[in-house]
Length: 113
Image (tube, rainbow, N blue to C red):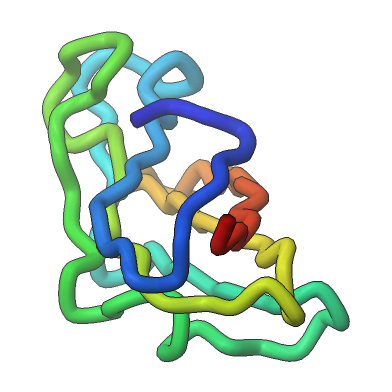
């Protein structure tokens, strides 16, 4: 899912992805071992393990380009209205030397009603 923000309930868990493919050249790939994901709450405190399952951070084919390994995907979960909105930050790093680096922020709002 390509988006800038979304709303979910705290019980819901699903995967979201960020496609960096439009920035990448032909044959350029993300290097998963160099990529990262960080989650912060509305006050700026890091809460990555609360709102995402880091074991699910993976590469997928680009959702807008179809290019191989140009998107990062992760399972989001939990959160609460009090600490919402959360900022989900994806860091994409490519296999070039020196690597290209991109960052994408997505706002996740928790609403229980």
